[in-house]
Length: 533
Image (cartoon, rainbow, N blue to C red; front, side, top):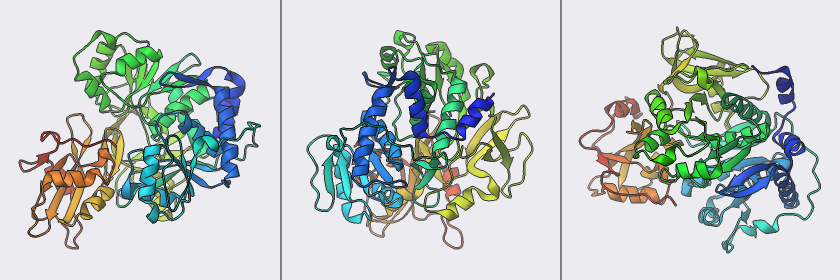
């Protein structure tokens, strides 16, 4: 249950105020650990203030958007805090983005300034002629990239000498971040996340996980994802230590948990079957980890994972637009369900006309928050999409669920035309735009098919131009240089026509229902790999 003290505190809470409180309470304690490099709460406060002063000197003002394309390292976190301390809005960009994916996001958020790793800075320069607002590129490390159009500055030179605290300009309703999520009928949309939303993420999740000041939270997920952001705010609010590794490795996972002395970890749906598919080894038990937040893991994996590793899996439900709204403590978990509704939120299961359906009947999950600004406030620059998603004053998740008579919710499938592959949200529209830019492709449709890991894989049905001899490997190589690695289709099928309505709209549900056929080409079975960068 949430106390009135927590509730009232949320009404005036901001990301910057949360840091100030934690510095006062836990200043010298280790806050962040990046692969063994440790930083206290006071360190993060001091260095982010120095960077904030530098950003202000470059002209960053309240309400500005500042984009960052950074790996899991100290500067990713310093950049968030610095941007917010300057009163601006942080826009963390997926580090796999390139080409049109990257250009769209930078133009959509209107950022004039981008902070990037050296490799990603080069990607920005590759699309510089199509950028409408970006004029300054701050490079984290390495020899500075050369640009004829953008001012390129080393990040280390941006830090000001003074760490004198800045006045907190932020209110709970002010935007802390724009987090881009896959579109369903168009390009990716920026989710407007206010400061108070992150407070509730941290409070709700840490409550379920039982996090205290002695806990060490370890994640291998990237810091531009809501899941890793949630880990960060759990630590910030609870006074714990957060460990961020560079990426997930099944072979190194258990060693990492042991070396970092982690008590809590984080697993996306596909990661659990990947770990269980490996031969059991003693190191699966040589760790201190007691619990893992593991949304979307099929129920039949829970008992086996706990038996082999000693780690309990905790399911739940949340989204970038909402919060962690559905879950249950480990003692009350029912594998195969997401849990029950948290206090402070309302949920309904509805039909296509927003009428409630009976318990046990599938319908769309719609949500509402009672606390002010505990949910996102809409989609950036697209009021029509905001009105559509929040119609009748309920957020429509696009997820089909069942509410059971005991109040537990069970996930069924997605209504949205989006693909979720190993934790990545992929816009089928954006995949299709890349495919359609190939001169030998007449039309194409991208859609999800189920994988052996209980999540989606990307499949594309392609109609070639007359006389074309385009093959599957050529399609993969074309996509590889133009989209994130995780969006490159695994399954391809050349077809003569695509199913369509009378007015020409592709009927993707027919493609999804048909799924993989004996004519489908499998990239992985063919041994064709895709470079991650």
